[in-house]
Every structure is written in C-alpha cells, then in structure tokens.
Image (cartoon, rainbow, N blue to C red):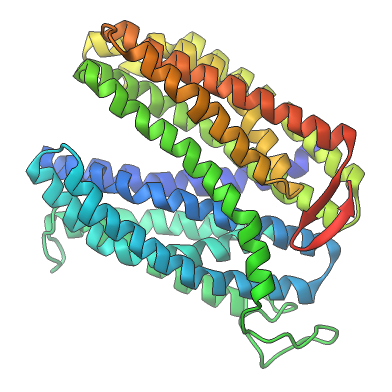
Length: 463
C-alpha cells in the first residue's frame, strides 16, 4: 500500500496537469464553434496538424524526466544540474525542427487535404502563431519533465492550470474582439495559445531561479553555488545531449507511431459517411478521456522506477513496476464497468442523432475491453522507460499498430456497410492493443523476473 501511495502521489498531479492541457483544446473548440462552423472546422484541422509533430517532442523529453529521476534518486546534485541545463540546450535545436515541421504542415500537408476552402484559410491563420508556439514548447517540456524527475509534478500542474485559466478569457477576447483586441476568429485561439505558452515559460524560469526547493541546485545560475556542488558550467555537453536523444528518440517515435495509427483510423472510416465518422468520434473522445488515467500512472511509474534505480534499489524498482501494473489494471476494470453500464447515457451527451448514439454505444463495448489491455500496455511501457529500455517500445508499436492493426483495419472496412465497417475498424484497434499489451508484458517480465542490465543517462546498474 505504501508503494501504491507513492505512485498515486505522483500520478494525481500528472493527471490534473494533463487534463488542463487537454482543456486548452476543449476551450478552443467550444469558443471557435460559437463563432461559426467554418471557424470550428479550421481550428480542429489546424490543431490536428499541430498535435502530430508535438507528440514526438513529448516523447523526446520524457527521457529527460527519467534521467533526472535517476540522478535525483542517486543524490547526484551536480549531475542533475548538468542534465537539467542540457535538456534546455536540447530544446533549442528541437524547437527549430518543430518550426520546420509545423511549417510543412501549414504550407504542404494542409493544401493536400480534401477540406473546405474556408476551413483551410482558418487553419492557415491558426497555424501562424502556433509555429512560434512550436519553438517554445520544447522548453516548456524540458522544465516540466525536469520538475517531475525531481519529484515535484505539482509545479508543472500549477503552471498548466494557470495556463488553462488564462486561455479562457484570451480565447474570448481574441476570437470575438473584446477589450480593445482585434476579432481574429478561430485564428485567435492560436494567438491565445502563444501568449499562454510564453507566460508558462516565463513562470517556470522565475520559479527555477528563485524557488526555495531549487536553491540547493543553483539551476540557471552561476553566481551562487552551494557548498559541495561542483561548478559545472551552463554550456551544452555533446555526450549528454546524445544520451538524452538516444533514449528519447525511440520514445517520441513510439508515441508518434501510436498517435499516427489513431489519427489514420478516421480517414479510413470517412469513406463510410458522416454517421460513421461522428459515431467513431464520440466513442474515441470518451475512450481518450479514460486513457488519461493509465497515462498518468505510466509517467509516475517511469519516474519512480528511475529514482529507485538511481538510488541503487533494484528491488524497489521491481516493486514499483509490479504495483503500477496492478493499479493500472484495477483502474481499467472500473473504467470497463463504466462503459458497460453507462454507454447509452454517455454517448447521448454528445449527440441527439439516434443513429450516432446507437452506433457509438456499441463501439463502447469494444472500448471497455480495450481499456483493460491498453492499461497493461501503457503501464508496462512506463516500466520499460524507467529501466531505459525504450527501443523495444518502438518495435512493439510498429508491429502491433502498423504491421497488424492498420492492415487489418483496411481489410475489415473495405466493402462494408456503415455499422459493419466502423465495428471492423474498432475490432482492428482492439487486436492491435491486445498485441501491444501482450508484447509489452512479455518484455516487462523479462526485465522484472529474468534480470538485465539497465542504462539510463550513461549510468549502468544491475536490475
């Protein structure tokens, strides 16, 4: 129970922080929707194009959290300071690549998509300020994962909640033109996001330099070094950057691989008509809300496993992994029950069309089973990342989602009617998640039971 409490202590603020970030998008959708269908369509389209490359960035910096966590567990203040500063240096070239990625989405991918001209215009305007946000976001992620690795996820949670609160009036003012600001329509959501990201970054810099907890590390400062802390400089170290990328690149690629699979499913289903797309959208929205719970647990597991290994406590790392898997599966059982018992009521909240409600309700039967295997996959992935085994997660994602799931989806949807086609797509999702969960558990068992050598941030330890 004590270990479960430690996981929950980390997972709860991670969950709240994630919901605050999701809330930014929800606010954008609600506010732009009131400005007109074209504005809503443009913001939705632009946000989708922006999110794909950003998911890769999130994965790259998850590695930083694990590496900081291990150094924190080892009590290595000098190494932690070094890793923290280098994560910020890494954010600079990554931010430049993010700008390039969003510009490609804006000028090439958007033009290629078969969407209404008015929606494309709104999306184009929305992605202009989001290009600047793409450059700043890696710095936000570096700070956030650094705080989380030091066992302070509540710091990032507070900044995310403040960003969510500020985004609401900014959206209102910039979309409709209030308080002396121009009426920008859906594009105003992009400018509001840019302002919020800038505010969060400034707040995190100030906190890092002045917070009582941070003083012993002298982060972002060379003028004050506590006794016993080596005078490491603020310049980048190539080897540290390479180690972070070596661990983070497969994590980001795996996340992008899974996200790409789920982003492609609506495009396949779109051939079946609007009822099919709407039903899938309702069911997937509800499933994604449930997904936030195992995701937060997974991140907490990664941080605690890395911390235990850094402290030279492999038994504690194993206990964290086993407890996390059990907790994730228990939470998934509750989520499964909610979908089975309340599927009609939940889908009715999103649509008044009986066809959409009935079909989406039937899809939640698939989602109920998916929750169980997805929890095993996501929490198991958290264990693997904590041990530094990130390349296997990428291999698992490629096999499960692209070599098995996507071809099966194409085969089951092709030539089917609306109901059979959508259920076929969700059958493919279920098969992919079951495969991913099974392969992940097999890999976790080899690590927790069979034993192996783990490497995170260039440090090796027996596990």
